[in-house]
Structures are given as C-alpha cells and as structure tokens.
Image (spheres, rainbow, N blue to C red):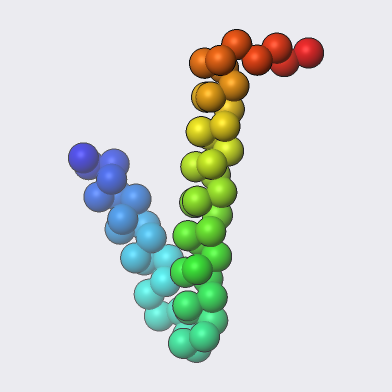
Length: 56
C-alpha cells in the first residue's frame, strides 16, 4: 500500500506547476497511454509464458 501511495505522489508531483494547460493535459494523456501500453505488453508476455509459447 505504501508503494501505491508513493507512485501516486510521484505522479502528482510530476504535473504540479507544469505550466500551460494544453501541455499539462497532453503529458497526462501521454503518461496514461504509456501505462496502458506497458500493461498490455506485460499481459501478452505473461500469456505467452502461461500457454507454453516457444521463444526461439
């Protein structure tokens, strides 16, 4: 639980006093897209490991 709160604090600190409204929203969206794509990649890798995919 402590690490989740730490990640939340890092996320909030990263966007505090960033500047222009459009820039701030762009980077927030970009961060969420990166988190989403990373989650999909990890899911696909674990799925391949679980189904016995041969990594040749």
